[in-house]
Image (cartoon, rainbow, N blue to C red; front, side, top):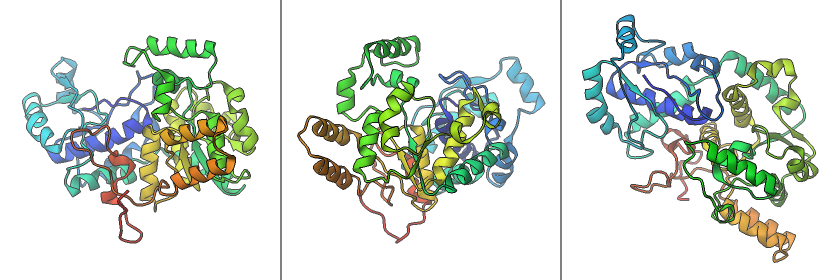
Length: 398
């Protein structure tokens, strides 16, 4: 049994890992339980987001998956005979063979209560890596209701020409968690700080926003994003679909982006209340809709490298290396500051931004491997190179 933690895309990657681990231990997996206690407090069950029957049947030849425990084992669990534990992060399959399998043999049922990043990015067999991809790209299909709504949004966008998905990670929870307050007034800084202290699982409390921003560890603000899109020569007539929750600061903070790109749209502006009513207070289902639209966009641009940015980037690579502009935030904030203080002209600024991102558009590349520092290396799901058809048979070394 597994309980996933985090938002939709963190859980998506975890489900892929847990299926793969169950397969290589030759044990039965119960359909994963989704996180209902995180910041978003989404009550959705697995079958509310994913097509559970397709998930089970499409993997039938690899792993036995059940919707619930058989009655005999269910009684054992209800009586408290279950061993619950978090596996060690970034572990190899060998760890699960040596440490977890004996526990399953002893207790009959084991409950893994944390699932994020529990399988190493690298050093796994090709079969392991390919199964992770098979789950991600084939077995995890959204429910017909979510898929249909996604197709409708994409059709509406396509009717009006090309569109970019901007994953503008500038919601209140992101800013409170990260401590990034660039462009916020004193009241907003206080509000965000109060929120960070209110959530005990956000461990870092005292944060220097300016230093963090200079290190490239903050999401770009809507104002900074507008500058960067213009510097990249993104046509102002392109539709820009905002894949995000509620932007902190609302229309006031979006004003410069809306002025530069008047065709800003969101799912809420494309669909009526009757379409979205079912999704209200179900942030993971809303995120699933954004995920589908992000896959189909002409260009995908995330302003922060969170889980959605990484998983969508990897999925777009799988779909034929569709263009994803991966912003170098550390370099960009320095260029933005130089431009704003007059050290760089617009031409110099724009040329520097374009030059920096020539090789950051989701082209074939090798994952960066950093032994013993898995958090700092490239994430498997952002570039599952073992599963990708190389257009020219070559991998770049970047």
